[in-house]
Image 1 (spheres, helix red, strand yellow):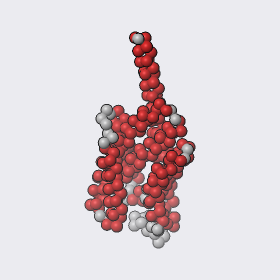
Image 2: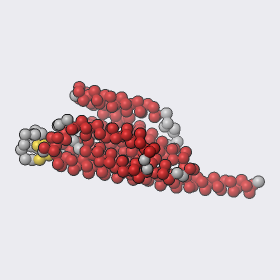
Image 3: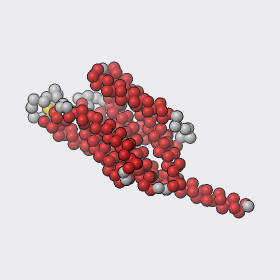
Image 4: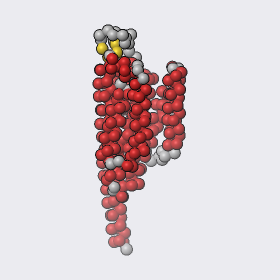
Length: 257
């Protein structure tokens, strides 16, 4: 009997070790995929801003010695700006609807395409904020994100109860932001940004723990296709947490040109 219990304990220990090793690999893939997406977004935003501004005088003056090119005018001033603005949001909903019908490779390609679209969508920040300010806020966001994600990974506290509240907060932010497009109220924008930072800080910890627990719950099946798509969905969630926290912090603390 004692021998059987020893063998059973050894098997349990071996299984836990396999799950721990698999979890580390899974999280590394999540953060790696997210990081590649961030690089694509940064390069796309920088490239689009470079094509949008010139020092040569045209009719599209920005008022600080810079001028919009024809491309920049089409991107930021024409009706095309609404397509550029809302395309990433539409792609997120489309991704959620199609994730079960596409392969892991297809999901990864879609994520990188989404990251490219997001870069084009936020390229306006290089026209509005100083380069130093953008880098500074990005580094602050990176440090905050790393700390919050680490806490979400190691904490023993169950964060699952945060989900409904945080999702409702995101919906409220979207509605308030759409309304403020027409109101153009600085006070409302400040309130949206402050609340947005708190909501996406919470989502960073919540999403990290959810990625971890979801893997542990399904690890025994070892469905590599499912694990691959799960890692990409996790990367998308954390990517959105980072980008949104960065944008709201930039609105609060960024120095404008």
